[in-house]
Image (cartoon, rainbow, N blue to C red; front, side):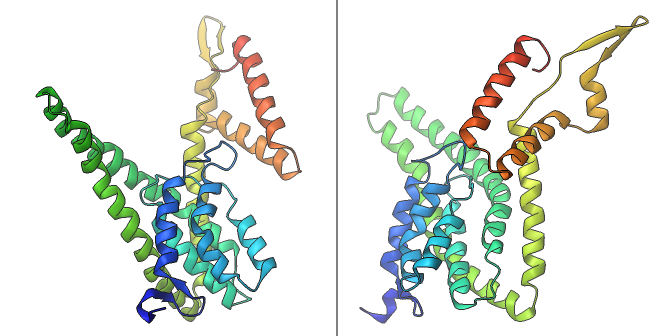
Length: 277
């Protein structure tokens, strides 16, 4: 094998492996679910690299697979950038037994929010609208190339972002992580990444769990809207309490399917009674 085809000499990770990760990244949403989101697609994408890294360490491979089944969700186009960083961190975890493997998922979670915001803005808010606008112009003239123009204009930046994001994430991620370890700031970086990740999860709770209480009381001629008082205590208090309750149940070994069923039943009953909206 030509030396210029080898990306990582230590683990014999080649350009072919990276091409495999690139193509597999298109399956990221193929197993989307509301328990682990895109986790299975993420693990499937980086599997060629993991097999090389842990080729002589079956227990390490098992731990890595389990690690990357943690919930992951992000706009698909920039996700290979995170895959590149993840591969670099897994290599470091294999080489250094003192490496904090929890930092791998901490970094992934910390990048989910910012990169999804950028990805949604550019790919769904700009590139899609621009491609559709140009394609519609051709379609109005009866040009049969209109759908192909739409696909080409939208997917050129999509494919380039995936391809170069994967390479840039791996190469720069390796250098960044090496510098952090040498400077002794890896623990601080992991701590900060965890804070960003928790903040991102908090934003998702507020956005995706819009639970409110529509109850209104009249006392001495004064109308009291219960939700307004709850918002004064803490905005989005009900979504937070609901999420923490489910989280506490799952941490005690509860089953996800039972939690989902309970949410559906309780939500339906409280909705019928007019206690939540």
